[in-house]
Image (cartoon, rainbow, N blue to C red; front, side, top):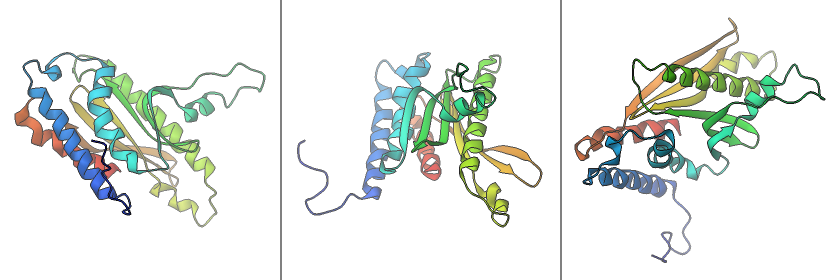
Length: 218
């Protein structure tokens, strides 16, 4: 166990990391066929984040050395700035949104994710969680666009800058993309893909399809 995975004199291979990530996630799913399958319980947001989203998302992005992954209701810097624009220096600052996952490069945020317990059609909470995610994505995009220095010639490229987010409810997840169309002054958000985490060994192929979507996001 103490032997290095990387032979002496060789550099780290991203492809090897991603292959190991796939195997780790598959092994994690195989444990759910135990006599007491924890996926069949009504689990909390914290359980879903710890046992599903952390292996699925966090471990995939470990090879992106500039990205810091912030978890556990991290407060968004972008929303702090937006909520305090009209406040004087001496005024008490408003706190920003707290969100389950945020990706940062230095002090700029590029990604957010919100988790809730289920996708019950009679439950209004998923709607509020998705609205919170979309609001966060817009704050992140606004802050990023303000940081960039556009000229009259390059400003048309604003619509090529896209922010991403994930809404994960129970066993189902949706990835979203957002951009700003400067020509008409509208923000557009669309669903880029859906994935599902199965609850038995027989549904592992369905679960592994989510890995392709996360790699595409990466």
